[in-house]
Length: 361
Ligand code: DP6
Image (tube, rainbow, N blue to C red; front, side, top):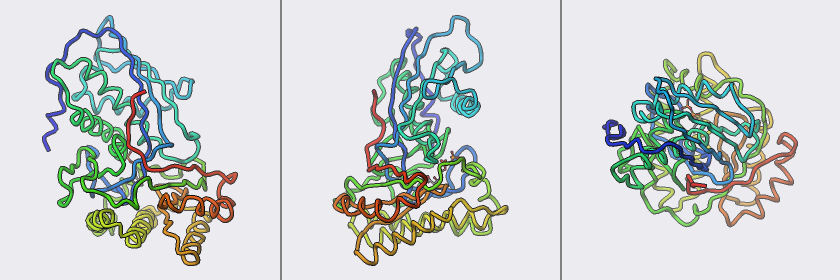
């Protein structure tokens, strides 16, 4: 993939001040990304549902520098307060994308960011956070560009930039289903940006529901970055990457045909395979908690007794995402209140559903 297409050619310097605000959602992977090589290239293709209610809203105020220098100058405010500890990650992100966004050097930036979900909920905010910044940068680039930028190119470049901040962020620009990672059966799929799942999806997956059961809201013991790194030299890595790519082929068919039983099996197996990689890393680690397993068992029991199509998935943490068709919403919410919320910290969960990606505010 030719990444030179993302280096802007003709920019004007006519803009002294500008401000842009974007809201971008989190996403939940069905086939998981776990393992990467430099620079943020995934070892296998992944696919996710874009979410809706769990989002980051970010504004960036740009003011042209009076005296130019060779640094990216910015201040960062998170939920109204200056956040020095978030700055190194953003600094590294800006350094990585500088060749694609040279205008970053021309402006003082003030970044204001907030999440719709509690910061300590254990929900990954890097996907929504990095994609929101990427969209704000693209808005500035559009304003500066002497050549017209198509909507498709804007999204593609935003996803390309977001990926360089956090891999899964590449899947948060669009919705309802996004593939990231080159895959033979997904036309246009790429290792360097996410693309919308290109096929017609069966109506059963429309407005799919995701209730996030907040089992553990604390800081993760092992970050995703460390976890990805442990896939280098992992004894099962090669097999896992093959399995994930094969699972993407399969889930593509299930989504198109509405084969929900096969979908359930594949999605749950993916979640457990992801955690199996963690259990078998060197050093090994466990991110699930006892209540994660309580919830999984309760879901299996509920499905057996009722014939429900609800299933679970996990990200790199202890929380459980309960996925189910819209048609089951009332019953599943009852089930959660009666049998699952007791395993959540302070009985808390977040109701979300599939969404369409970034929105300008
Ligand atoms: C388990 O995107 O958080 O959620 O690229 O290092 O920022 P970095 O990792 P990140 O990894 C997400 C891993 C996952 C699976 C997934 O979302 O596909």
